[in-house]
Length: 176
Image 1 (tube, rainbow, N blue to C red):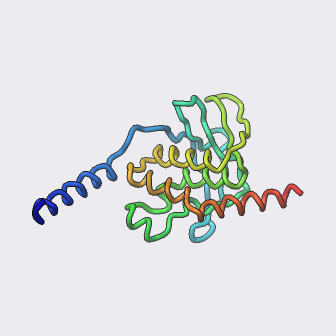
Image 2 (tube, rainbow, N blue to C red):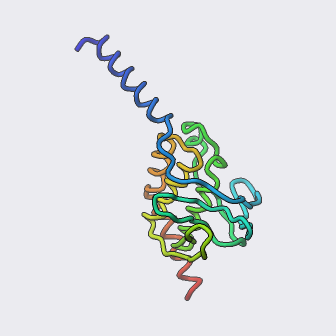
């Protein structure tokens, strides 16, 4: 293969990758309800719920809505580094609801679930399930395929595993 043919092939491959990364896949879910949160500092929010219209993620494939519990807790939202935001063309606020749901799942090792209009129940959640839920949640907030893949890779990292363990230890200490 000549240098020119190699450069052309590389250019075409990068163009195809860029098209994929900036495209949107099928919508896996839909955010419903009213988001209630208050900025408490740089990258820190006090999170609450509107009892009449809670912020929730509807996932048609499983026929359930997922949400976090009531107020009184704080979240740093999605932990996307500044450089990551620049690469992914987003801000931390772009996927705020997804970050809240993921943080709650990590903190409580569970999320609230219900059939639409039914009664909410706290269901246990593993780290893997919390991470998959985050990916679906980000997709529902409009993440491109590239953003979705990068965010999911981030929550699968060893740093995220350390955060999961930290929350588990903290919760065990509260229950003891």
